[in-house]
Length: 91
Image (tube, rainbow, N blue to C red; front, side):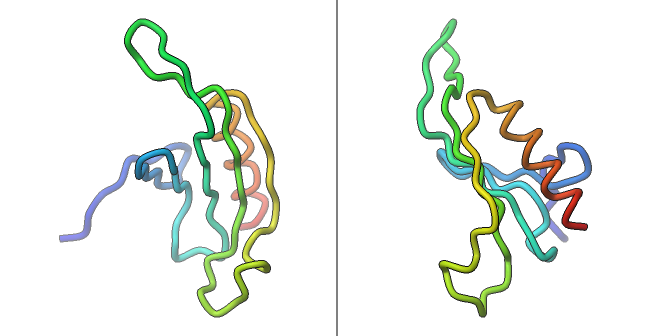
């Protein structure tokens, strides 16, 4: 049986430690969100500095050519918002 992932605005969202992958790996592009720093608020870790990277999923291209766009954001919502826009534009 295929594993189901959490979805946000039509794209799968997978977290592995401080890395969040957003998008379908079978598509041409996927967004990689790296949580650079966070702070604790009421016992919950809140991301306050994130690096968003739009990257190609083709395993046959050079690592330098994989990165298409980058952006720094100050909240997870803003990071997901820009990643969603990039993914929708690339469809």
